Length: 418
View 1 (cartoon, helix red, strand yellow):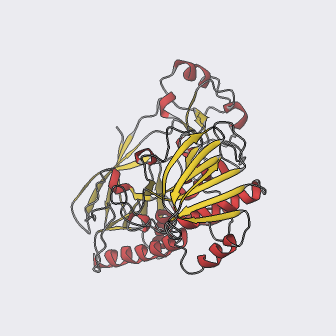
View 2: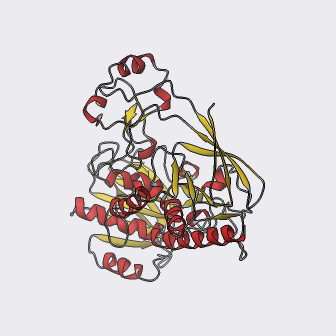
View 3: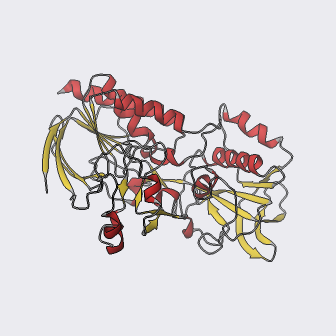
């Protein structure tokens, strides 16, 4: 392994919208920053969105602004395909070991787009949550930063791939690359480790994993995106024509057996996705089942616009089960306003699964206290380790940006103490 050493004021762990914003704001305030991201490009969950709410505009514009700020600032060093392996010591000399996995490509000014189509090996595509496959030589996504091609590590030892790679027209593929270790000394660590969608296969009677036309909201987001696996065409995985769609709220949230808290943004996400359906399938019938709709502040107007839409029906009741029937999927819930049991038959069901902090399902090297749900507990006093954005609590993008700016201020406080 090749070991490197460097010193920075701040280490940011996680290159989603929270981590990127924290890094940029801290750098523009004069700090030196190391940004560590496990994926081959920055952007996190936001990069997988079709649209933000409530403006319903694509996230690429906001991310591109941040990428430009990164490119123009020498104070930030970005490590992709990287993870924190260990942390020792305390501020102002926190010793961090980072493992950087190989990209198996070198930077070349060449577009592999056409040649990559001839690649004989493909792999499951995690960017699209396992829906569809991608070639073993791939570009992470249209607006990727850094803008570099990657070889899927699962294909490196495949004889068919290795033989094909020998015909590389630009000479950028390097299958002899190895992982390396970077040793960093930092004054504080911002943990922007984000969230994961709750595992919907744990939700009994809702059919995810058993019924092909039951999807999660994050999968539906990718199916709606022009750069998604279907090119933005809204189709049922079974091949059934989609004329009726049901959005099931609190799928695992506000449930003592799963996530006991409200994930905050799920209602607005489903209302946003209902707009996708209205745009692509204007005659489709849309049903949204909810316990209560939580759209505070300016999002109340966002809700009211959809309540007035004659093609959208809101049902107050928690869904008890989803079953396959001859003409689609039967969604059954008790209407808590009338006390009656309601069953609606649809072609596609979208489960609004909640946000689960990454720290709840993955052991991190963070030296910080977590609550019973895996969220970082913040202290009023400046600390060497602190959470950012959805690592602290469920948040929308706008609130995450505000929190990230606050995290940059914490980094400044810790740097000035040293």
